[in-house]
Amino acid sequence: MAQYRAGVIGLGWMGLLYDIAARIPDRFNVDDVDRPTPALDVHRAIRHHEHPGNEGLPSSYCEALWDRPEVELVAAADRDGKRLTAFTQRYGIAAVYTDAAEMLAKERLDIVAVATNTSMRADLTCLAVEHGARGIVTEKPMAHTLEQADRMVMTCADAGAALSCGAISTTHPSFAKAKSLVTSGAIGDVVSIEASGPGAQHQNWSYFVDSAPVWVIGIGDGPRRESGSDEFGGQGLMVTADGQVVHYRTGAPGVRITGSAGEIAYSYEQGWRLWQHVAGLAPNQRVEMPWPEPNFVPPYGAIYSLDDVIACMKGRLDEPKNSGRRVAVALEVEIALKQSSAQEGVRVDLPLADRSLGLHYDWFR
Image (cartoon, rainbow, N blue to C red; front, side, top):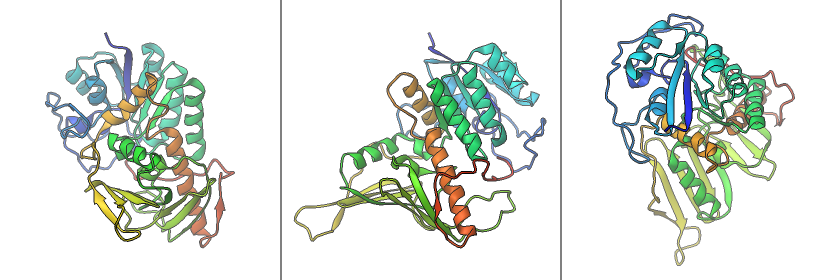
């Protein structure tokens, strides 16, 4: 018998469509009830994962929840009737709602996937927790403003609910292996961390930072893009309370962690790589070593974000790898870097006093 009742709010690409349709580029207003919907294959067969790193993983929250033996997917909410019909046809579940609040009040869910547009995520996350949910997975980005992110993190923390904000590469089990190498001293003392950007949508670096950021400097940010995004586009650095330095450099890999006795680096194309100092060689000479499994293998999907949340609910994990807390840290760093760049690279101290500050994202977010 399933331990957890689950529901999905928002049957867009990450909620449902990625696993039953091919992506289409049609623009829409995020508040439209009737959005463009591609041709759907509600009977599409998906080879579900057998072990971490297997290819052919389901991407959507619906399929990930449906796939878990200890979870019963019982309901979904969306304002678009076509997508509700597709959900019922695929899963045989008749409990569908056009009002997410009604679903949360009636279904008493343990796990809720919030895959709506960004503006709704904070309110629906908090409402789900108020109705008893103890596990929340959301689509990325987490929120528009610091206030929204603060509210999500605090509400979940106060209720003891696990919050994972985005099925990004950080949720993959290989990231836990990378952190275990760092904390076990496999590369010595950490000297610096490098990433291609602060990316509050893809903040791989944040998982490896355990001390609070205290200041940043940034340069080279650009104007808001035609897509609607004004995410930070420059370079900079951040310093934490314990003196850790994170560099944000154009051309850097997803994350690189340099230590006194070695280095690890991640990129989507190559996965993780490890270099270590070898006794008997010239000082500071590093040799590439085999990466201890698992390594990163694309594609990745919602199953890993969900797996972390369930591990937290079962007491096996303190917080998800891509926890709301860590994503909120990255959001604040990104906003501060924009402020610094706008003032020609001045130091900006954290935390930021104005919690109404935020970011715009691409039109479809």
